[in-house]
Length: 323
Ligand code: CO
Ligand code: CO
Image (cartoon, rainbow, N blue to C red):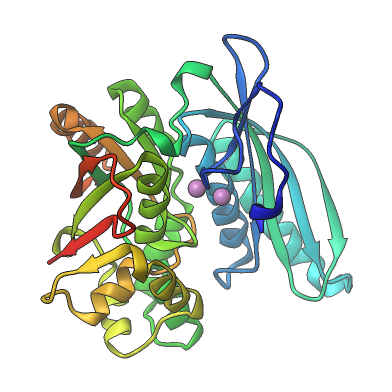
């Protein structure tokens, strides 16, 4: 849809929509730029409080993925108008407020309209130094790819809706989605990285493809090193996955070469549409161990799942997946 936007002529637009980046960036002064992003969606979990919390964590994520620091947010809510929904709207709001407070972000306004199916999210503004923007064009050959959350929330969510998951599994995947990418973002900025993106609706390979396409690089992923939710593996082997995931699998097939020993279920997992997924960090090879140990010290998953290969390639097969 963004394809039909007119070309941007304002030189203070530092990041627009052309490279499918995580957020837009606009320069205010030589030292200050604002990062702008918005996200809202339909309930991903049954519990209204956690729906609000996850929605907040998800909408903040793009700011950290750009290297920025979120500051203020505007609420977007669509809810049925009948009074019996008010208590759950209140719980959704509270989940969002608590998450925004944890992130140090003030909610300074918003807008609500009536809708049959609830939708909830935020527009977020962050700050960044114009020289420190982690946009999609900055991946370099030799960068290691570090992933900070497990993959499989789309598949697990489909399993939960079908009543196929235990309470323990629901708790694990809810907590993962509600976890802020804040510390991961701060640690990568302290370490100094090439770039980053967050894994959301287009799945691991889709978001990787956006960065590689803008950076004109190829990358190799080791499917066996990608951390998946155990239940996502179990469910996908039973043919449970959301429609969006199969859409991704088809959409990114022209950009991906799978080696013969990668099983079909892993291809689906690698393309699973995520909600509030982790950061995919592109760190220069020599800083990889520093980053991984700094993340792990704070209890953040830091899986080295692959590496960026050569630059300057025009080949559309940018992603090589091996077992
Ligand atoms: Co993003
Ligand atoms: Co986004």
